[in-house]
Image (cartoon, rainbow, N blue to C red):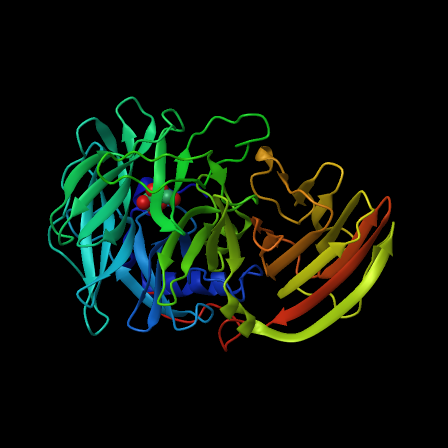
Length: 504
Ligand code: FRU
């Protein structure tokens, strides 16, 4: 079905109760609903927003179009958790109902100030000729958890020399000054990030562009996020329209980071290394980080991409968020690990130690659609080792390590229904060594694979049939020792899904 502009910009209260109930029923009947990932009650989820720890709880919002699986009029939907594992759907937090955000409460971030949780976000507006004008806006959560908007934007104008692609403020504080990094497009249609400062979150001064070595790197940088980790400066961003180069940047959109010295807030000079992709899978975009009360730098991403259809569209919903990951840094490289709290989902464990001799093997207890699996391959003589999962006679998803090529590959060619095939169905990255550790989180329609304790991550949606539940380990051309554990995981909520909670 083609969605008209009118249909995309319908507000939720324009839908009848019957329409909403029918949509929700369709979504609830979808065979691809996740068990322990944050997913929309109906409609389309995209970027995580306002990720924060405040008043003893984690708060996480996301971009949401309620009425169908398309990018339309965006709201902020609110979920919260005391443990990063069990999330409670709270309802709509911010609605596009003011002149400064009439066409979408776009992405933004949160910061605690004066015992209050503040949100800075982009209000997207369009004039009668559909010309975009962005405002940067502020909202806050009062002591009863009610979220209110400031009744005027805090940044009204796009800075001189930049276009209306100016959005996604990420705020942090140094001593008594707040800083915001905002995604921007120069008038010559190249992407960059700009810096603002403020004494109080209300009054903002344009400090200038962050000077990087990437002068021609895509046409717009979405969702920038600057933070410091162990004395390193890190700038995460999502450059749109990066030209593919060799094996690099072949997939639709990129999300990655540059790391280096601390950003010089006076000169805005950021000395940094190469742009590194944050994730090696297919479906990962617009991540956001926060720091929690334990001092951990945490990251959550959108497990999806703009501009491509997904198999769940037919069921009235699209996308989910990734599991929360903890970031650390080693020699300028970000390491991502699933947060320890996720172990709370583990039920029974099955453990196997074995040697594979140029063969494929299956083990009792190793199967399912919702599990965590850790597998270490050592004493590697084989040329290639790996795991086929969500498999049956017709389907399989494969993660493999080729010792000769020193490459890990995720292959979803036979994963069932495969989105965006034209961009390729295998994804590869370089991993060196004579051993490899694969740590998988499999949910009904996704997989997140942490390689060698978070040195690389492959995040992907997969859409196999519910009957594809087998797991098979293999070694080609030689032997390998294998040490593996599977934990079947409980659903995030008691009703068996992650679907509880109000639409509005
Ligand atoms: C990234 C993005 C942001 C924008 C939001 C709108 O996916 O395009 O730049 O704020 O999504 O939903």
